Length: 423
Image (cartoon, rainbow, N blue to C red):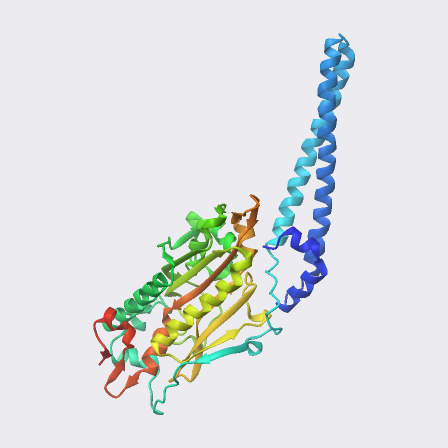
């Protein structure tokens, strides 16, 4: 969440930046500033009363020594009155602080200066394009028909077992899925990311820490009896490793990667864009997460983008990078770059990765700090990216690599699959 310091330094600029995300923030910002003013006034009153109490403590001792019992009792009565007043002030302080936090949790991160203006995906900017565009015949099959033809994925069986959006991978389909996971993990390790294996369910504090709560509560699967949430991405448990942690400055940067299943309700999704693997309730993903000093985070963001690009190049997929406009960005992000691959049979771009810098927004929620050379603690910058999400990668690989002889498997996966063609 935004810090009070950020807001108080230039509230007008904060409101203007929030508008780039389509968020009308003036009322919320004004309320925070007003409540903070009340909080500081209450704190000053409390400090003054504490100073009076100290004076009375010394005075009572002197009166007792002097045998002035009646005056001492009057002083004790004044102390009791002051303590009652302090108790009331403490309650009012707690109320103001809780209300400030409640409002701050509803305010999204401000976009950085590189974010283009715009409210919809049509306003996103294509930054870079690469990869060979496949030349398929007019009767090329979409991945859901290829999956059925070669017995790779059974969507109907998933509906029987669980419901729509929970496919069952079979035979070479399952092996290709596992090969992609291992390829992504090995590539991340080679790039210096330490692999962790996180839980797939998290508590409420973790959801608030990375910003899924309260923003995306309705999109997460909730285990009511235990007050736990199924993770929408490994970003949530991995970043929360560093919640309430002060990291020695010389330990930064921290680079983690993790494979996990991801669970998303995708409420409101329907139509042709959700067919097959295009949009699932459960899918696999390898995530990369970085904890950085603020001065290093944008160089780290470029490294993460280059890493994702290298994966798509090795897979031989056509790709482009989008710099998202303010209105198409997530609640928590300061800047996001989406990677999309071309689906030749569907004739459309499919998102396969988002790489984001959250600056201090998540770190402030998490209380994730580092100790600088000045011996003081400072908020870290947090970053994360998909490297990569599997369903649409699988869809593009099946569609783009189909031939009359079968589906060609990219060479970088051969050592994991044990086969070079699906026939």
